[in-house]
Image 1 (cartoon, rainbow, N blue to C red):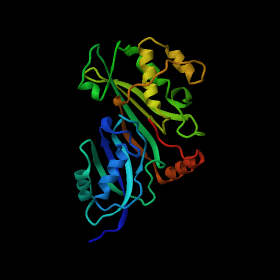
Image 2: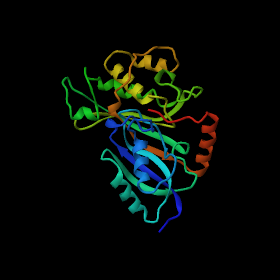
Image 3: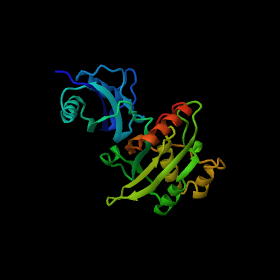
Image 4: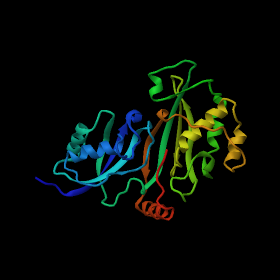
Length: 271
C-alpha cells in the first residue's frame, strides 16, 4: 500500500545539550541529522529536510519547525507516532500536519521568538543550570525592563550580532523584548523579531545582565544601537536559550517575504 507524496510540517522540541546545533554537519550529532535518520527508516528518500532556523550547539527548542516530502499511506497521527518511535529521547515531534507543496519553514516565516532563562544564586545548582544561566552578582531588577525596551523597533543591531551571510544586512525589527520574573525567582527574557543575527539573542541577554550588574549604563546600550558606544564583550551561555515559536502570515505576506529573502541573499535564521 502506497500513499501520495505530500509535504509535512512538523514542530520539534529538543534538549540541545547533546546536539552540535540543529543544522546537519559531517561526523557530528545534530537535530537535522537525527530527524533525517529517523525519516529514512519510514521510507523517506529525500536529500534534506528544511528547517525554520538554525540553533547553536547547546541551544534548545520547543517550537522549531521543519518540513519534508514523504509518501505515507496512513494517517497523520500514525506518522507522528511512527516518527517519535524512531527519534532519540532528546528530540520529539510535538505536532504534524500537511502543508502546501511550496511551504518553506524558513523563507515563509514572519517572526521567530526565543526565550532565555536565568537565575541569581551565589552557589552552583547543577539541576537548574542545565537549562538556565546562573548569574552572580544578582541583577538589579529595576534595570532589566528599561534596557529591554530599547530594542523594540527597527534598528541596526551590528553591535549585538553578526550578519548571517557575508553581505547580509544587520537591520532587524524586534516586536517583543521583555523580562518576566517567575514564582521560583527565575528570570525569563522573551524576544520576538522578523529574524535574528548570528548569536544575537545571547548577546542581547549578556548586555542586559551586564547593565543590571552595573557594568554599563542603559544610555550606553541605547548609544550602541547608533554605534556610538562600546559595550562589554561576551555572550550569555547557550544552555539558557530556547527557540519557542515560529509564526507564519497570510499567503500574500509569505510571497512578499520570499521576495525580500531572495533580495537579501537568502538570509538564514540564527541564534
